[in-house]
Length: 160
Image (tube, rainbow, N blue to C red):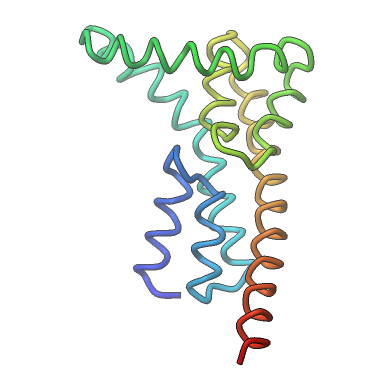
């Protein structure tokens, strides 16, 4: 694996838009072995919980003094609350894990962590729930990616 591929995979794992849902397929299309794509993507994506809590307990407080940030963050909080409140209030940390595990847009580690933070849930238990959800999402995305790539290769070969 080239350094460039490693960096792009890592950045995709950490970005709120893609997380591991974008990182694993990218790495696989670059020829990275599945086990390595999985380990890198899951490990970095699982770091989002602690990194987001670190941000929320430090820089976030400083940024809240800026009007534009307060407005943007307020909208983000409201969206996150609507997405996760019912599941988390009903199922607790298991709800966070399952929410993060669903590999769909806006159901990843960022929203799960933010939802738990909004509801004042325990930090360490949230980290564990988010990490477990990330592992499950990583397995799902890996399986879908491998079968998708194999199906594409089959279609390409059968047309020649």
